[in-house]
Structure formats: C-alpha cells, structure tokens
Amino acid sequence: MKLSTNLVVDSLQDVANPAKVIEDLGFESLYISERKHDPFMQLAVAATATDRIKLGPEIALAFPRNPMVLAYSSWDLQQATNGRFVLGLGTQVKAHNERRFGLKWESPGPKLREYILAIRAIWDCFQNGSELNFHGEFFNFNLMTPMFNPGPLAVGPPPIFVGAVNPWNCRMSGEVADGFHCHGFHTARTLRENVINNIEDGLQESGRSRSDFTITAPVMAVMGGNQKEIDIMRERVRGMIGFYGATSYYKNMFEAHNWEQTFNRLLEKSRNNQWDTMADEITDEMIDEFAVTGYFEEIPALLEEKYGDMLDEVLIYFGEPEKGDPDNWRRLVKAFQQHDN
Image 1: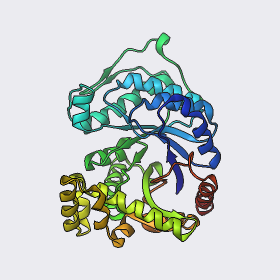
Image 2: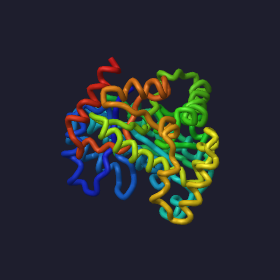
Image 3: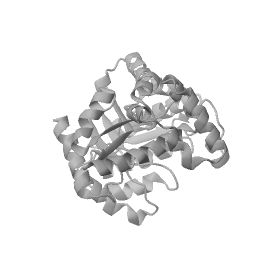
C-alpha cells in the first residue's frame, strides 16, 4: 500500500514549490482535483518541478473536454513527466454538466466508457501510426494527418483512472480502465460491497486480474505523535463524519451499519442549520468504522488490517504535507515505505 496525496492551490505560481516538497518527502503520487482551476495547467507546472513522483488529475471532468483535445494534453504531460502522468476521469453530476457547462446530459456511464475507448484509439494512432477510425454512439474520429500527429513516446501512453460511485461505472472501470479513484467517505464494508466487488466483476469480464489494476482512495486516519494530537484529530474526524452524514446520498451507507436513526437526526440538523452539533451524533464505534486510530508508525498496518487487499494507494484526509510539520510527514511516509517492503 503506497502513500499519495493531493494539492489544492489557487495560482500557478503556488504549484512548483509544494510539488517539490511533496516529492522530496517521498510520496508515491500527487493528484490535483478539478475545482476552481484547470488541473492540467497546474500539472504542467508540477511536471517541470519534479522528477520522480507520479502526477495526475483526481479527477478531471471528461464531458466538457473533447476526447481529442484531452488526448493531446495528456500526451504532452506524459512526455513532460517522462511517463509519470496518470489521467483521471469522471463524469460529475447532471446539474453541473447542464447548468455549469451547458452540456447535454446523456447516458453518462456508457458515454464515459466510449470516451475512454476513443482516447485509446487516438493514442494508438499517435504511438503506433495506426489508422484513426473510431466510430461510436457519441464520438467519431477518422482524420489524423502527419502535421497534427505528435508521434510516439518512448514511455508509451499514460494509464487512465476513473473516479465514480455508481455500480455500473465501477464495473465499467474494471473492464476498460487501468485504475480507480474511490470516493473518500466510506467504511471498509461499504467500499467492498459497493465499489470493489463491481470493479472485480469488470476485471473478470475483461479477462484481467486484480494485479493489472490500481485502486486509490482517501482514508480517514486519527493519527498523531502523542495522545493529545490523536485526541484533537479524533474530534476533527468526528466532525467530518457528521458533516458528510447529513447528505441524503449517504443514507444507504448508514443503513448498511444499522445507523438509520443517526442519519435521520443528522439530516434534520442540516435542515435546521444545526451544523455545530452534528458531531455529537457520531459515536466512537462509528469513528472506528470510518477511520483507523494510532501513532504515525502504526497507520500502515492498521489500514492494511481494515482494508486488506482492496487498496493500492491511500491519501490521508486532512493531509497538507506541503504546509504541515515535515518531520511528522516523514515519519508517516517512512512507515508506509517500511511496511510496503
């Protein structure tokens, strides 16, 4: 199990130094989410500032970008990173596609599947000189002249990860993608039942094994260098669980653990703007289902005990290694490296 992290900054000038700090600390991968800014521009800066760490969006919105445009951007980043780029893709929800990007919302799962296959066809043209002749329900590409073909890469095309929660998309990811970004709010039980089992069904359909696929997820860790730090972190995690638990989407997760009444109380508090009391509804038992608790050196083994072989990479909630105490992060990274060996 590898340790990765993400980076959230508001300007291109703020990317290079934190990216280099994160790399020097020893993290496996650095992901940049698409929020207020274009992740590909920030990744381009990170690519020139680092030498070893894997880089990618977690995740980039697929549908606002044409597959050909994204194929070019990804090709350039794969070249700039010397093979360290990971293309993460997701659909976002209907409201954002229609109302923020002005797009037609149509069969998002099958459309994303075709999107991935289209990019692969374009990359095959770039890498191997094959004829571009892709025809699907949503996309058609059949023109590529030498002037517009960037040609092959010594490192080959990048892997494609999918970020999703829908069971159909999880199965589809196992069938056609190289990896998967899990949503961070989960318990080990609900992750297995709702995500991992579906991914493995897709892998079986494609004739691949679990070792051919990378699964990464944010995880909650109540950790610290002493008991006081652990107690402070525990209350932060309690508050986060309460905040997420007030969202209707997560009702099934609470029901899976027979916590229906807790969910109902959280939902009622959200409707009455009682945000500051939500943490009171979260018991220690619930924290133990959502998180692991221990000193920095204990976290890798505790995560492995909780998740087994489900995850290949983890990101720690509340983690900002570029801002936090570097000694603590070095302790955690070292623990992961020693445990992995």
